[in-house]
Image: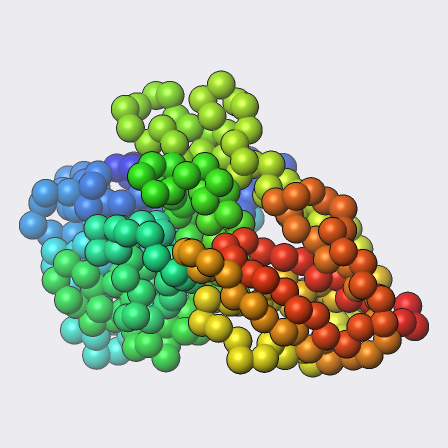
Length: 351
């Protein structure tokens, strides 16, 4: 619905064009209606208005329009962003308002299939560089210090309206339509590039179905926001673009795997700043991604692979797309992890 948009009919018609082309992902509600208010069916809401009823009615109608259309009914609807800013409790902190919620909109009102947040890594409540900045931004609980899932769908940050419990949030379908970091102050271009690789991993590991980073190329149509991008205004790539390209090249796999296997790996005395994600290629090769989020220094870790007699390739996307090490017949690895991911491709000896 963009910023301040209210034209449901046009959005649905455009969605059908995209669906026919195989290019439709989902429908998204209003962008940050706390910053861009709306006027819907003669009623103003969001922005500086005292009520968000117009925002709630618009999102309700968008959901109904999509789900009642035979072409579009199976496509998901994402919520508005920043429901935590509600000034009155119209229930936008819920995907469907549950019984007894005591909201201004009636119980059972359906708003969305996915919760949608703008969980930027640096936030006024967490403005300084620190360990685990990316991991914290993806945290679905009250422990997160940024404008994340809990502050928008748990207990709203503006007026403290109750939404989902932390247990419910952990299972709540969710997406991020804006996140990222600007190159400024302590965030150098090198740190920025590593943050964005870690971001995709942390978001996926912590349950986000989709993550959209702000921004592909720095904007030239407005003041500010000039150093978030993977690309500079002249389209030249920053390190973030090069490293992410290396990373996806290492991981790419066009095949499918009928039945994923298991790798009973362990990381001995795993530090809080070390995280892991296990993937498997269509040829059966495991890809164990381990990444650090330590601001300074490194963590020395021992990874027990859970198998013996294996062939291993170790990749570092900040260096390139070829293996940096090829140990053989190993059952464990010693690694130094700082602030970016390492990919360990593990092929059992019988492959």
